[in-house]
Length: 452
Image 1 (cartoon, rainbow, N blue to C red):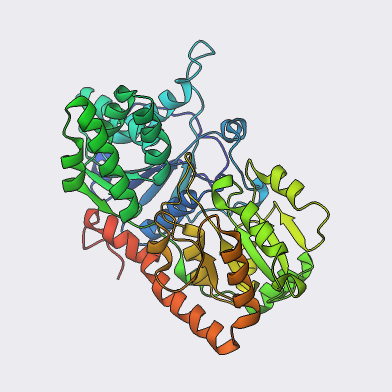
Image 2: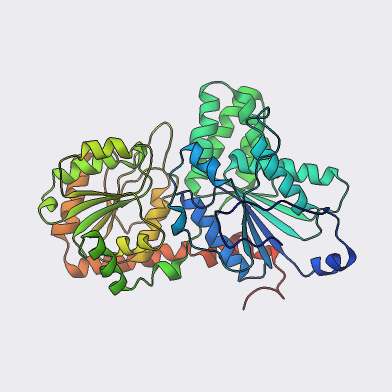
């Protein structure tokens, strides 16, 4: 097994043949492997965190090895994705390795070199005799890669013991399938649904996402005469994103105060936005609402994160010393900032390119607890993430955001804040990685190997 303590390091070249010798074959019966294909660290994305949480839980609950297959760091940089600083990425536990297969072939295959590398590595893993569960997060391209790799592995004639699980996230539907339907490009949509349904188990990150999948499938069926909608209704179940509730809920207040001091902040002295900085997150609305609020005279506004819209919002806030932008927050500092904020605001709003289909950052803040409540909208799957434990606002409505900020900072008593925070944490415990793991993966671990 290739161990890789550095999650940003490239995959070492594979040597040898997929065939196991006798000794390795005897050991394979005792091994259980989980492979996760995902946009992993350093990508700033809730699902890269989900992959880490599932990997850590799996290695403690019967899986003897976990491999995270992802993209070379240079490819992630070239794609323009928001990335964490490389030196802030925490190592994984022993037994978990991150592989970034380098491109196969030369420049004559511009778009297929990296996916070929992923498929090839999966074929090696699928044919080495170790019972394997392969989970793909994002249908495009990860589930496509997994489906084709399993087909190729079976075609080798070698023994293949692989179970595939495909998790559809919101952008798979709101971005990829929706654009196919709107442009009447039904071939790609049919290919995507066929690939998804070829998996042994199909899951969605929320009930809202599942409904989107079925709705999109109905439109493809109406145009093409297919039966994807019926299959999706029958087969797609819900698996909420996994989070480390223990780590998030055990923030040391002294550590939080020290981190805030380094940032020039005080506990309860700021409202916080911490997520990807994109138009769909409503940061522009939050800036305007904060400037119109009475709370502005008591707290600062912190915008933490990176993304394509960051320069625009920095210009919008230019000249206001009470609006701070942090683009270097790492995984360790994130819960500390969440713990100390007077309110955590995510005024997400539906956009053609993106709809919030769950709201991982919201649930993380709820698990952290701390000083103040969550302020958010009912966009997409957010209600599933927050229940009734938040201060509701209307998407795109600046006066409602202003009123919520003023209520959180000036209108709530300390007892009301503490009661809200406690209720929010209790609700969010359902997303703890242990609960999600057992619902999603425990069936693939023999009882004799499962953790007590």
